[in-house]
Image (tube, rainbow, N blue to C red; front, side, top):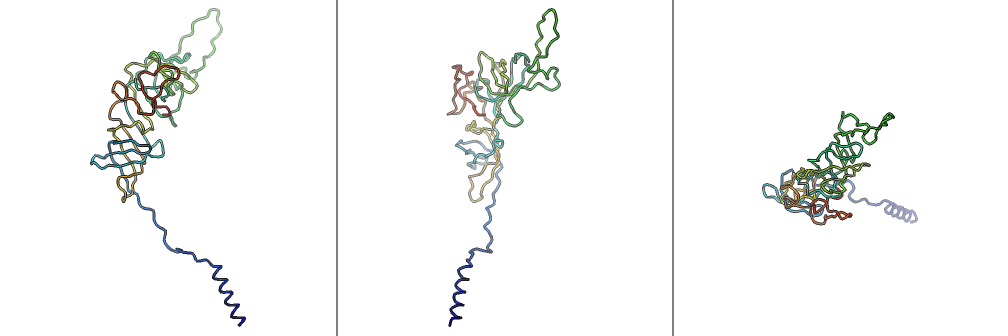
Length: 264
């Protein structure tokens, strides 16, 4: 009798100590396969984090904006009235190396997103004499009669943040340098930024995205290349988008521009 009681107690202990693992040995559920969406489309609307598009065949999609900024491209043309304080710009100019002033009108300006490879500063063209003394002036040997030092003008690439445009002259913070350069009235402006919010209805977009076959019409964007359908600027009746208006704190309005690309 005692032996039987001991066996029952041992069996009860073993049954409690060994837990039952449910689902052991069963195959894990596979993640659903994503289909690829590569198409040219027209923008139908912009929402925070989402671009609404329609393909050439009429299919409508809601594309989530890629998380990587470099996967978003926005390209457009504009007139000089679109330039605004706070924009990051780049241009080529013949520069006075002592006073850091442009010696000719700037006829072409690009609005850019600062990133690796596009960094603020003043960069003389390769192979130009005097490039090693861009911001410093070498000492001249002492002479009895002082002569006026010749201005060294060097072709340079200027990349920096636009402080403003006053009386046709741009002021640009290019790294540690403050550059002033005259802007031609008919200067061409190109826009190459990583900001989908500039897009407008009717703009063209190249879409590279993924989606679940069972959920057509919704896709996860991997790359968006947007091209403006019309030039931007007051002359073309297109200013910046809403909620981005900006006015100079000094009280000077930047040339005809109504809105800013601060943070571009």
